Amino acid sequence: MPTTDEVYAAAVASRAAYLSESDARQALIGMGWPCFQWLDSGTSTQAFVAWNDKEAMVAFRGTELVEL
Image (tube, rainbow, N blue to C red):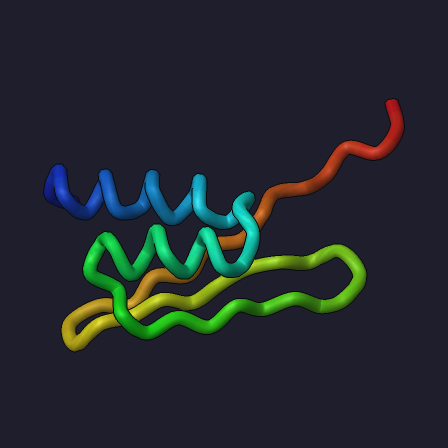
C-alpha cells in the first residue's frame, strides 16, 4: 500500500503534467525529484519522467476533448 507521501507525490505529478515544462520541472525538483525529462511528441502527447536516487515518476496528460 502506498504511503501518504507517495500518494501526495503522485497527485503533484498528475497536476504538474498540465503545467509548462519549466513550471513542471520546478514543481518536481521542489518535491525531491532532481532529475527531469520532458517528453513532447510535437502533436498531442506531453509527459515527463522525474527521478531521484530511489524512485522514478512518469506522468502523462489526459485526453483532450476537442469536440462533443
